[in-house]
Image (cartoon, rainbow, N blue to C red):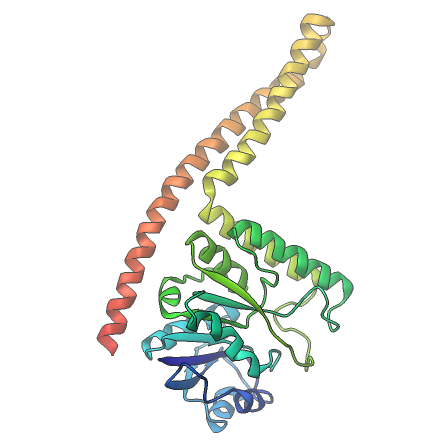
Length: 316
C-alpha cells in the first residue's frame, strides 16, 4: 500500500525543512511512504526549501487561496499519485510526527476510514482558558451536527482512506476541518479519534487572527455545512419558532379583543402576528425546497466521485 503525507504550506521556508526531516519514511503496513507539499502561493521560497529538504512531490498554487483550498488541492494530487491512505499534517511541526502510526492503526485494522488526532484541547497548556473552552464547545457542536464523537474537531492532523478522499468536497474558504467532519458524519463514514502529542508552538496561528475571527468563521462554516446536509431540519425549526411567535401574538390579540374588550388598541400586534405566520410558513416551504435540492446534490456528489475516478484512472 502507498501512503502520502501531505503538508499544506504558506510562507513556511524557515520551518518546512525541519518538519519534513522529522516525518517517518518507513511505516508498518505500507510499501511506499512519500511526502507531498502544497505551496499555497508562498512568496518566501517555500517550494524550493521543500524540494531541497527531500519532498517527493510539490504542488504550487498560483496564488494564496487559503488552507481549505490547499488541503483540497493536496487531496486531489495524492489521489492522482495513487495514494491508498493520505495523512495531513501542518508545516509548523505542531503535531508530533512520530504519532503518525497511531493515526494509521485504526485504518490498517479496518476500524476507521477517517482518523482525527486528538490534541486534548481541554488541557493544552499553550491555549488560553478561553480558547480551550471555545475549542471544547466547538467540538461538541460539530459532533452533534455530524452525529459523531470528535473531541478535537479543529485538529488538522488526520488520516483518510482513498475512498473517503474521493468523496470529499471542500467548499469553505476558511478551513476544511469542520466541514469535512460534518460531511463525513452525514455520509456514515467510520470516524475515529486517537490521542496524539503536540510540540511547542513556534509562532502564532495564521489561520485564526483572534477569538472574534475564530468565532465568526467557525460559526459560519458549521451553520453552512449543517444547513447543506440537514436543510429540512434547519428551516423547519426556524419556521416553527416564527410560527409559534405569530400564533402567540394572535392569541394575545384575541384575548384582549374578546375577553378584555381592548383589541382595537392592539391592531399592530395583529398585523405583526399575520406577518410572522406568513414568514414562518414560507420558511418551512423553503426548507422543503432545500431538502429536494440537497437530494439532487447527493446525486451530483456521486457523479463527481465517478468523474474523479475516471480522471485519475486515465492519468495513471
